[in-house]
Image 1 (cartoon, helix red, strand yellow):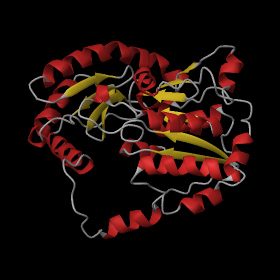
Image 2: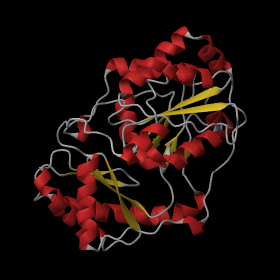
Image 3: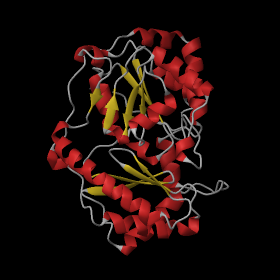
Length: 330
């Protein structure tokens, strides 16, 4: 599988450009005709690769997290300063996808395109209230059209049921909770071989069967953690705690930047009692997940394998997202 990484600053333009290309280019029509191979089974990971929990007990770590929160979640538009040497090097290896769209379409000729899309900030805008991150009817129509040509999956840190309630397209794959909860299309997709093989209309996947006991155990304590975080953060105006079934999100979209350090300390005070959980960070969100090596990138690999495209040279995966958690997909 070719690993040519490009980035895009405007995800809506990228999806629109792909849709226009689908309508106007014969190469996309040809790629859409290729049927997926016979699907594989479960994709598991060795226990030796379980991630260690981050250090949530050190004061210096909190300071570093707050600095990182500021860097990844700017509260206002900043002017573009001259790029540093490191930034220039990164841009060189990750050019703009829109600027290279012609090269991308040429590279995809004769290959099966598989689409992977983030939700928040990609299919919907980042809004103050996460429960109101609705996608527009125009965007829904675009994604529906995309899925007619290629197998298409939504890969999100949100609860799978929550994402489905926003998107409402049964022909897609949905990978929620950073890929720990995956469901195949229930109808309207010619790529739903997983459903056909299992003899059901929709199939639920778990990411790594050997971790299921651990995940089940952690699921039992998530409600305790969720309640503790709600209670602990209620003194911080704007903090929003969301239970994503296999993960918990602490949104600070509406929290004054001066209160970010206070919020980080509150989250730290709760998590120090739960060593099997780890803390990660996204765009204006702190996320609590099990300490296992599973993320959006592993979910992408799992879906490619399930579609019969593992280690194939004639597949062209495309991922569009706006968050650092999506880097694992790239």
